[in-house]
Image (cartoon, rainbow, N blue to C red):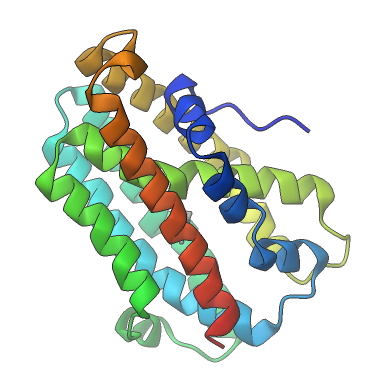
Amino acid sequence: MSAPEYGRVFAKLREGCPTPWAAYTQHAFVEGLRDGTLPRASFLHYLVQDYVFLVHFARAWSLGVVKAETLDEMKICARTVDALVNHEMSLHVKTCAAAGISEAALFAAKEDVENLAYTRYVLDAGVQGDFLDLIAALAPCCFGYGEIGLRLAQTAVPDTPYAEWIATYADDDYQQVMADVGAMFDGAVVRRLGDAFDTTPRWAHLQTRFTTATELEVGFWDMGLCGA
Ligand SMILES: Cc1ncc(CN)c(N)n1
């Protein structure tokens, strides 16, 4: 099965860290979602943490509006904030409500250190660096879940209790936002570094941002498996 296309910059960055990328997108937690063996307590623990994660990711995408250089970049960042807080988080609110966890409890949940490390790494990339630093650190989050959602939609066992989670990320609307983010990222990189972007001195630094965020995704799944 071929991976979905989210642009040439993402494809190059993914190519630059094959081992962490596979560890992230084929993690045991993901396998447990696919075959339905993931313990419910692990899933709920992950979901509570992920709600808090998305709060901070929405802050990071909002920083994208601040750091953007074109109106198109601003629009994509603003739309991604909307997708996170008004759409993706509905899954967390609904699933947790059914398990007796209120949205107020979600918002007030204490962050696990893996969560703290990841979200603050990304925010710091945006504060310390420029728009490209920020988007390179945000990219694994977006495209990794896009890949996972599409793969699991095609391969999950029919009675996995995690079908709604899978559908959220395989959904056409989520995939469209990811395709638009990928196109924006391509344009932003070419605009600042030129068409031969991967031959510039800056590229190794962007690859490090992307690889580190990918490794932090692996840590997030580990936390989900262990934290229940
Ligand atoms: C940890 C994590 N990474 C990515 C996604 C997809 N937005 C998420 N919900 N949570």
